[in-house]
Image 1 (cartoon, helix red, strand yellow):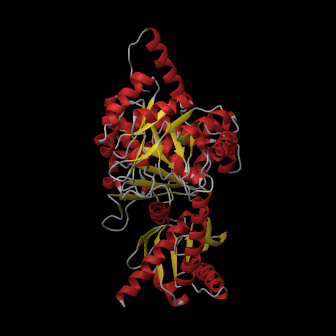
Image 2 (spheres, rainbow, N blue to C red):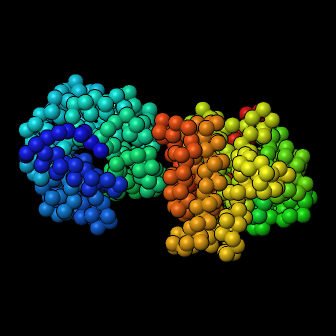
Length: 555
């Protein structure tokens, strides 16, 4: 990482020190301990205490504002300190470390890295020349706070040692960016030779992990950790909105799977309440319909008893669905006699509320797009690994359905035309090699469940690790085919086999570059779903609300 320079003597020693310092920050969390003047914690002593707490929690660096805070923090912790100084300029707006005097004061106080804003506006105030002077005279690494790829490139050319996405969403030309964007981090990493730090709007541990997956050298988090007033306000706002929304539009989401049926009451923002899971009957169409009516009625009665009756039901079902008519177009023998069922009409007649129906993995993809890892991503694939293998794909920001609503049959991509017989009647389908039963087969039936194999592999058992490796090789072939066809930015794995299975993700990270054309250009990211076992229920609730909105508008 960083610029490669041929130096000698004192200069070589300085460069090695810089390189060692930047390496110490790799892969970790830097906590930004700052507070505005009106904040109750606005004093160096409080910032030092925040820094101590961050160090105890495992942070690998601290970012602070002002020489006084740098002095206090350096006395309190042993961690590297990134120093900044915010100053209001002649145009009435703040800049980060706009002068050499500010930088010199920060270094004198003990800052090992100085952060300088290098946005287009800051460049007009001389930021790039300031970078060169700091390095020449103060001999410390300089970090550029930027908002765009172009600004980062200009800063790199000026000689900065690392860049941070701090200003993304806070400049006039990026004001529309209001959520954390892993794709922006990936774009920076693709264009720069120096380390990229993710900072700004990183609100959750999941987003921090996504930043590292996108290629970030490390992650800086401030408000979400060190601003109690704002953290409290977020909780209060969420509770207030949740109560109001629940009173206005409550829906029921149901995920009908080949093994189990999951259900929940959902608020308009997708907050789950009263989750439940029951076994799915395997007795044919009429038994499945009666089962769904019973599950839905129980949830509807719960909402009525709470005084907030649900206004719609969403069904996520295995099989391919026409979402306009609510008919199951085709289903494998995992759900016998399900093909052709007019599911929406049957349930509406029985329940007397609007019912929307969607394929289960399409529902999961919808949930990922609105609430999960796919939020803000236009091109991604969601794959479930469980009893069967299913898929949902977003292309250009829209859910892919196909001419006959039969798209995304990911589990039925052929990887061995003479291979295992699949539930669809064909041979060699990916589902036959990437389902839970397939994992057990790879383990030579030494374990009673796929979950047992995964846990054993995590614990280092040789048989289990070999089985998971073999399973990963088959899965990678299927994923590579999908990536070569659709060119997604992100691949999300869901279902029981994908949950808490870092061994699987590691295998795929190793295998996929060998199977995907132009893998370095694509910079594909692969991750596990953050929505857990109720992801398709989230999506069913979203589909129910969308359908209800359409019904109301049609009237």
